[in-house]
Length: 133
Image (cartoon, rainbow, N blue to C red; front, side, top):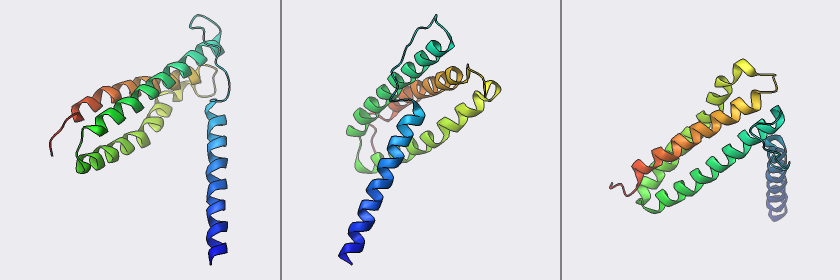
């Protein structure tokens, strides 16, 4: 029984590690960015990735700040709302970038949408700050 649990635990760790390494590669997070807003398409795409990452980092910070101000019940409510929002953000941006799918501009359009949506969500989090039950 103990051996099975250990094997299952290691299997879970390996699966998570595989997913994380594959996800980072797919998102291009391991590649250095060569951002130039007036450069070639790849450089403009890199700027869009950079800008989205900055917006995502700001969202994470604001989310943590707001969570600290809430009661346990409201933390659960905000966490559920945030998860719902996250599940919808990427598909919505994929739909918004559909017209450029397959083209070299697609990453720029998709990441710009992610950035805009993320910045909007960051601002929306303020309505939760210090909320009473």
